[in-house]
Image (cartoon, rainbow, N blue to C red):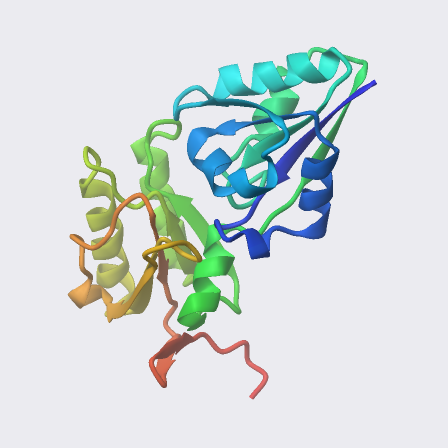
Amino acid sequence: MGILFVVGIGPGDISLINRQALYAIEQSDYICGYETYIKQIENIIKNKKIYSNKMGKEKERVKEALDLANQGFVVSLISGGDASLYAMASLTHELNIYDNIKIEIVPGITAALAASAKLGAPISDDLAIISMSDLLTSWNIIKSRINAVNIGDFVCAIYNPKSSKRTKQIKYAIEEFYKKRGNLLCGIVKNCFRDNEEIKICTLSSFDYNFVDMSSIVIVGNTKTYKKNNILITPRGYL
């Protein structure tokens, strides 16, 4: 029986890959993944057979991993961050047509939690995560989710905030948060736990749209979030 591990490798620093993920990678004959994520772990997969491809080729990548596992190999399908969140776990189960392979999902540290650690403690209360990418989710649905965040006064982590072609979505979100909840504090972490890491803490009214790109995570606090010693804190309510 072949085994397919769907592995979350965390935010990018090898030291943040958990032991279960490292074990899965060590046991694997093949490593499959998006070329950027493969590069992040190249030092620990030197003796492995590699299948990598570009963004937008997710189905091909998953099918290759499933086919290899069906042939009896042990395979690790790599995802950045967590294996389930905006990643390959759901697609793997959706596309699986084989009865003779074992699929194991290996969780990892998602970008929102990594960015929160860099910013202090903005995530300690209820959290909403929204992607600004409308490639797979309609913009109308994304707008309704932004509205729901305002209604619930959630801390919000924003993934895929802006690309070279998609610039209006993050502006809409920031403006809606400002209209409904005021001048909230927020943080931007670019290249979190990777080379060229940059961190900015600001308010919604001073949000730097030019700083944000696809390598950034934006965390917008709720109405209780405050700044202390140049970090963000959202109180849990213990005091």
